[in-house]
Image (cartoon, rainbow, N blue to C red; front, side, top):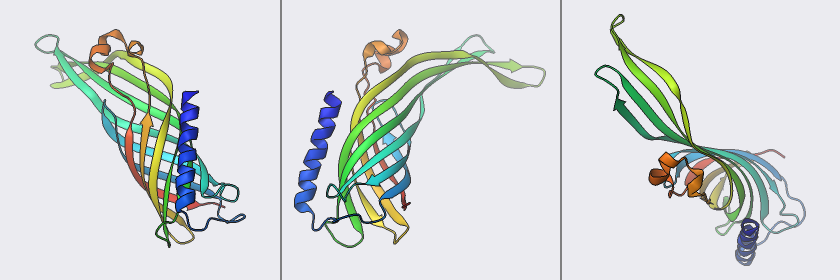
Length: 229
């Protein structure tokens, strides 16, 4: 409930700012009103940094609410390994542990758009709610030396699940869109997620090292939005 209230506060505040600064907004329906886009960039939280990808479908409600657009999106952040540890088993064999994390999310956002500089530059700000699927696991492999082929081999020994939770949260977003004629826009966007997890959701062996880390990413992306209709 707090997430919903906070998101509403963000949208109302954004509306007041945008409405006050905006020159003239659309009166009646102005096309296009449906957009699809994809962007990519850099994402980071307290655990790790990685590549952030996001695809979205946006619908303009500017005929009813000045400057307002609604967006549904799906995103994923590809993180590198948190850790890679090799523990000697004996003189020839080794156990390899690779710990990685993942974050997939679905989000509903509302944002207000304006053209403070006129022309083909659109500035927007907003926020909304999101559902995140968070996971952390350690893959365990065993490496051994094969005298026959004179080389190392690796075999999978299993996976240890350190964290696997569905978490709801909220986000704020701000960005600039540059018009590309009738095709769409080139977008530059900053997005911040706010997520809360519980220390006890982590497997006990990982709590001390990772349990107090914040999953909430901040991402900087660029991409394209295409006019659909």
